[in-house]
Length: 179
Image (cartoon, rainbow, N blue to C red; front, side, top):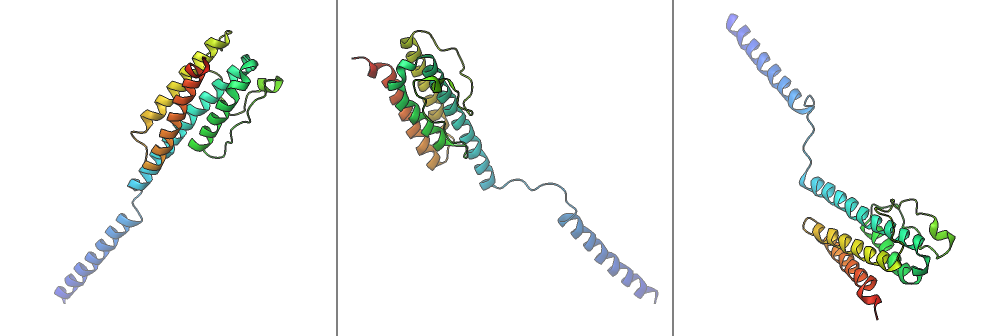
């Protein structure tokens, strides 16, 4: 009987060890699973969208500042500003609609609630203000062009379109206004 007791003990011990190991690897493991490739790609795209929308929002704030400082430029800048506002929405963080285009009156002085403060004061000379706004358009277009390298295909097409529009805006603010 002594042999049977050992066998029973060994069998019971093996079964208990197997049960304990199964418990440790399935429910007792507290390490989070690494994100899947799809989750990593979604996070990267969300971060890219956030950065792209922020760049466009900064440009929109610059338009607002120039319009506030130079209401006489409203006829020229309002259509371009509306385009930049549409870019903010398209590039989007979602849920934050662009502010309506300001009028060349006192309503232009009210800053949009989501627009950041302008990065630099607006020059007193309207021609210099337009030149600086064109430079901001080019810089934002360059930012979107650089982002193409890591963007997924659909978003890359959107970024390319927005960057091209920014280049056109820069032209209209400088060369296109001469004549």
